[in-house]
Length: 411
Image (spheres, rainbow, N blue to C red):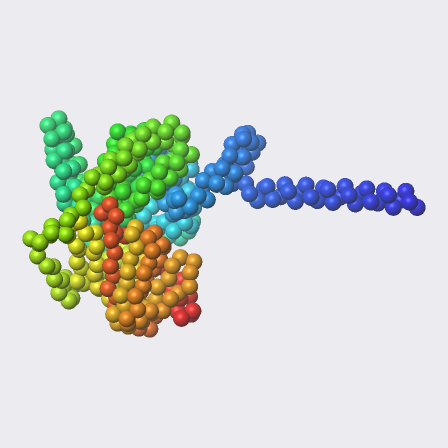
């Protein structure tokens, strides 16, 4: 009798051990990201794919998931890795990249890595759009992006001096098409266009072109930490040598910008005595809020900008009922003065706050948020922010109707 009991206990232990092993294996299966063949052919690659690339790098908060998707797709398109594009376009869409932004990314890179890579990418992306029943992409009818006049004048002069004498047609196309048309298209933000271009140059091994575009990216709102993290991300998709070659170039850009910032003199109180007061009249220069950054009827008026060395600027923004901004951040924060109506403001992951006349809202630097009118009442606020490296705001995806409806349910 004791022998039978002992035998049953041994059998039960074996069964429980088997179940435990099976459970561990099942858990490992669930964590697998690489294609199944990887684990049979290159198990080490499977390990690094699961634990490092997707288990660590993609989880790092120094670069938002949406930005990582932009970087990854840009590298794949610019290096002609068509077979990998589909899966990362799906991930990009899941991470908030819009179909029209993916199309514009491909358009941008046609001029930086060649038409064949762009056309090949279109074929892969079209399949994904078909799977998800995404309608054909149309050109944005938003206002074109205005490039900074002084910087454009310097760039044009350089092209006319260094390029035009040898390749006049190339110089003409650079000024007229590349910067006179492509870079001003509103189908993707200036910051994202710069990010895409910068990482593509690293991926195709053109570090000598990086200083101009890294500076341009940071002037357009990319932070130094984001630029650094983007290069780190590129290492996994274009290889360590490409990323390592870019590091000293980026280091020189950082040092140059830091030196310029430290060397800028602080004006004395007496300076500015010759300047005039600046009065911006109520409702001056009214215009609609760009469709790329707002949902619903939005009017922007009374925009002003302080004179150097001040970095402050602002405007009065009026939202009709149901209208709101897209998600966005400010490098140095933003202050909202509610002047009329009823509005909502929300940080990512936080509760919706209802605001009204006389309320003042402070939004800290780099905090992802949106604000606008309530569903049943219009709202007007005066918004004030400061620029960092020429950038006041970084626009992101729009607030969906579903998320906006949830805000109304909570109010």
